[in-house]
Amino acid sequence: MRRMVLRSMLVAAILCLFLGSASAEQLRVIGNRSVPAASLDQKTIQNIYLGKMKLWENGMKVEFVTLSKGDTQDAFLKNYVKKNNSTFTRYWKKKVFTGGGQAPVSFEKERDLVKYVETTKGAIGFVTSGANTDQVKILSEMSI
Image (cartoon, rainbow, N blue to C red):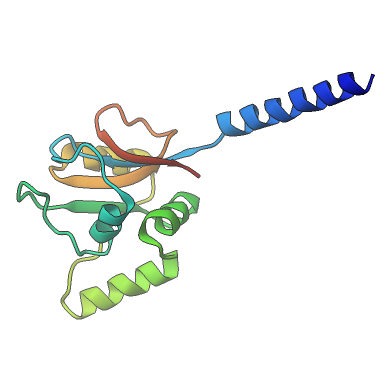
């Protein structure tokens, strides 16, 4: 009897783990097919979004875009840029004010961001796994 209870608990725990991981959403950093990199690490993505990396290795301009405020942007900034929305916004306001760069273009909807990345050479952005990314490269992906 005790064995059956333990076995049932084990099966339930495994099912919870499986179902929990199956429903986990993915955060994707996507790029235009012209982007020369096959993948990007966190530090490179951070440097791009902080305006420290302005050119791809082939000399093409990096065009990075963001989503407007929301859970996806919050997860991206936390995991890749290591900032929250307010510090990222302040960072870019200061950079623009001092002539150090131009703030990224921001999109309300994932499909609009994906379309921009798809049609703009050197462009990268981020979306959730629910977005249609068939026409762009996936450069990085993580569970959120």
